[in-house]
Amino acid sequence: MNVILILIPVSLAFAGAFLLAFIWSVRSGQFEDTDTPAMRILGEDDVMPAAVNRLSEPETENLK
Image (cartoon, rainbow, N blue to C red; front, side, top):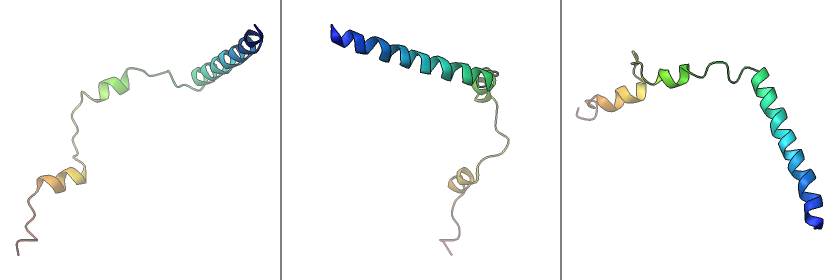
């Protein structure tokens, strides 16, 4: 029974902390644009990263 007297205030403190964190994130604009990151993967990249270009090109310097 004594454990409940400790767990209720601790759980209310955790809930309050998460509520404050959620309110802060909404006010700072974390949830303004939720569609663009999901759609970004569908677009084609015009520029390939340099690491990918190096892997796809044959190495002719080692053959000389």
